[in-house]
Amino acid sequence: MIEREASRLNLSIQQEGYAIVPFPKFIAAELKRYVLEYTSMLDFVNCASPTNFPTISAQISHADDARFYSSMQHAFRYFPPQFANLLVDWVTENFCDVFDAAQIGTHPISPIHLQQNPNLEAHSPSFYFRFVRPNKSDIAYAHVDKHYWELSQANEHATFPSFSFTDRWKLWIPLLGCNSDNMLQIVPGSHKYEVPFDLEFIAGESKPSIRSSWLAANGDKFMCPLKQTHDTALLMHDTLVHRGPKNPGPLARVSAELTIFTSRR
Ligand SMILES: O=C(O)CCC(=O)C(=O)O
Ligand SMILES: [Fe+2]
Image 1: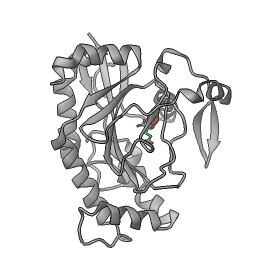
Image 2: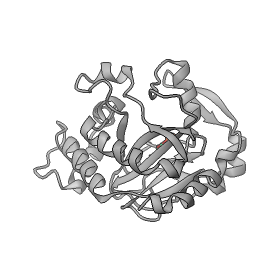
Image 3: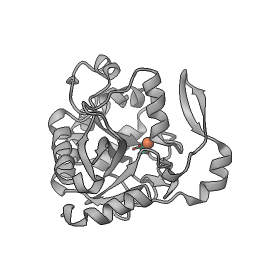
Image 4: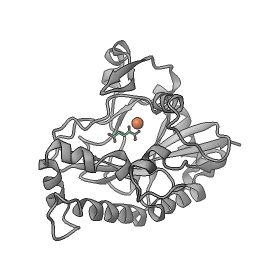
């Protein structure tokens, strides 16, 4: 199905820096099942049925911030390898022509996170979910993933695929509680520009922060490219500007993220 649309998707990622790609129901169903199971088993969640996302969402959203942050640290949000491999196999089998790539791959979980969560398996692909509570500031300010990569590389936190790559992409997958007001927003075509940024020190960490003059001039160009909350995902280049809006609710918003590395043919 994707191979038939490959040239249109390739044109879109070249020209706009992103494409909306079909996403298989069976993988989405597995990912949702894992997130529901994980979140329903948190010690402050009391929900008899792990299929009841509204109850799980409300209980997590009403827990205090300290509990939320400790159970939702990055190291605890990775999908186990069988789920990650399901997705990675699907991408590597279907996206060669979309990327016009000789090689496609991902990268393993960071050693820092392996230390923080002893249940993680070394070498398993870095694929994780994000949980954004309604009306809280659990949001990603406007950024370009490449700036984070350069920073984590400088900090020696970054991991890489086994081949030498030319491009890096993000696959963003809506899972639970998503709607047009809370899904990822992008600036189409922004991958064609050098977006200026500074390093800011926030809570003991340095973070890249896009210059306010660029945001003032381009803020009205942010849009949500996903028109439906299922059966599709967003693929974007690592130089495309994007942000997570504040989640107006009613439910928490759960999405998943995979970084894909490619080498051009
Ligand atoms: O989901 C979000 O709010 C932010 C996600 C993001 O920045 C990414 O996938 O690179
Ligand atoms: Fe990002």
